[in-house]
Image (spheres, rainbow, N blue to C red):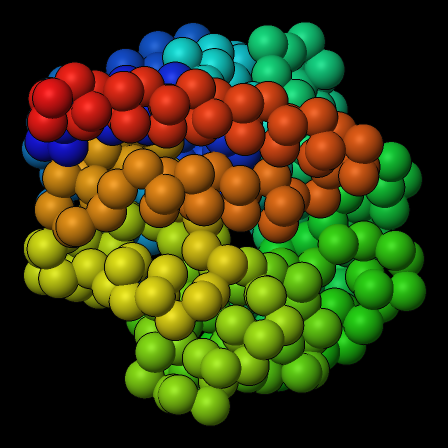
Length: 348
Ligand code: HPA
Ligand SMILES: [Zn+2]
């Protein structure tokens, strides 16, 4: 474990979460509750047997069970309850702002109307307890025409969505497959992000930047395989929304000690820490921070930088960003003074 002071700081520092799939926050208990409420049959007999199935070999083996879990979501209230539970839980980790991904196609394909999905999630965000906004993701294993149709369906709800993303099975579905729909979203003034370089090669990060014009890369950990790309990401300060527990659970890295988070930071990249699908990967924001800081030689200055990056890379208004950053810097000024005083007392 990181020392007690560092643990406390990691837990208490204000932070933003920029990579959370709301369907991935659906805990097994809530899956069972919603299944019962909606009369949906599940392939598992109990919460325990469902949780025991959460052993993954790669991204696809997770996605299969993740989409099955989402099948219990039918009504606006279901989407509200799922989102409210995440926001309450995130607040306990001192997440002050969340930019929440949702996968409308997972639901509209089952006959759930787009407005049921968006209104339920959005209404929970309005009710707090933390600041939150919505990013609509296109499923990359489906066609671009289906993504374009999804965008059209979402247009009446444009005011409730700040941006779009790209998720689901990465290999074999490069960013360029979605160039037209992302260009249309750009013209609509939506923020743009995409998963790239999680399982896919560094070339996918490059095409996400050059052909989709994304502002952040979700995951992006494979960028280090390409030194020219790494230098570019550092120069342009393109944020990477890294998800340590997810990367270990989906076998991107064999164990946390092998995670390249510190190498990414040392390369000057704008790295953030996030939970991805916390109900499936073993923890929310602070569990991700603690696991990474336990396994890797990371200290107070890294914690400060990671939390700063989370606000800087967010799509918050400049004034809100400034306020969060000032609050964060004050926390670290106090922590640094305490650490110095403790060290002096120990030496003296
Ligand atoms: O980590 C992920 N990668 C791609 N798609 C996803 N959908 C939910 N989580 C993920
Ligand atoms: Zn993700």
